[in-house]
Amino acid sequence: DGGITQSPKYLFRKEGQNVTLSCEQNLNHDAMYWYRQDPGQGLRLIYYSQIVNDFQKGDIAEGYSVSREKKESFPLTVTSAQKNPTAFYLCASKGAHSSGANVLTFGAGSRLTVL
Amino acid sequence: KQEVTQIPAALSVPEGENLVLNCSFTDSAIYNLQWFRQDPGKGLTSLLLIQSSQREQTSGRLNASLDKSSGRSTLYIAASQPGDSATYLCAVLTGGATNKLIFGTGTLLAVQP
Image: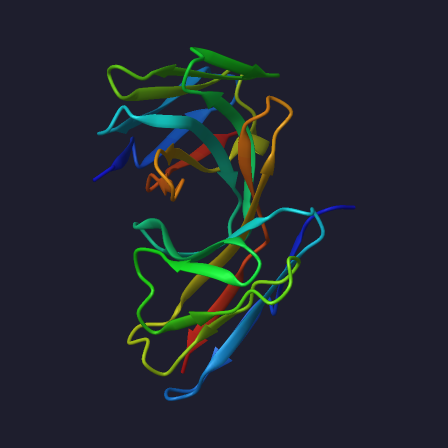
């Protein structure tokens, strides 16, 4: 089955530690995205990548880093510089819909808690 | 700057009722609008996508409409069921080189058996 796999599902981090969230897709999509979801605030865009070896900052990129060395993979590192990292993180990729439009397909999410 | 608002923030209805969820956006220059469903602690599932040139899309008991000029979309759910209980999010795809998807804050729906 084609889809997006995020791991780990739950992650606990001590203050000052960097952690990396994995996102892998086998949909052959070029574009991939990382969103952060907080209660009452909807989804906010952290980083996105339109193509391999290229990525752009979203609206809340400070304290995060990404890489896109392979088409299938778009890992997100939450660094110690991120002041409030506890949140639900969602990865998505964009590809063709049956209507011809591009739609986002989401992973199941990773919940990060800072202790 | 594009802003997307969803009203109401939460809604509780008895099983069998028809209901409408609202989504409004400030900039009418969009490529498309998507409605998603999110179950607690889960990712998002795409329900319907409406291209900017379309007025509505239907899938089963769901019907989404789009009025781009007024910056509004509605998601109509017919004959609601307890299994419809979830958070419903709308998102607009903006124009330009970035093609960013801007999300609303969602409507939490509870369908009571």
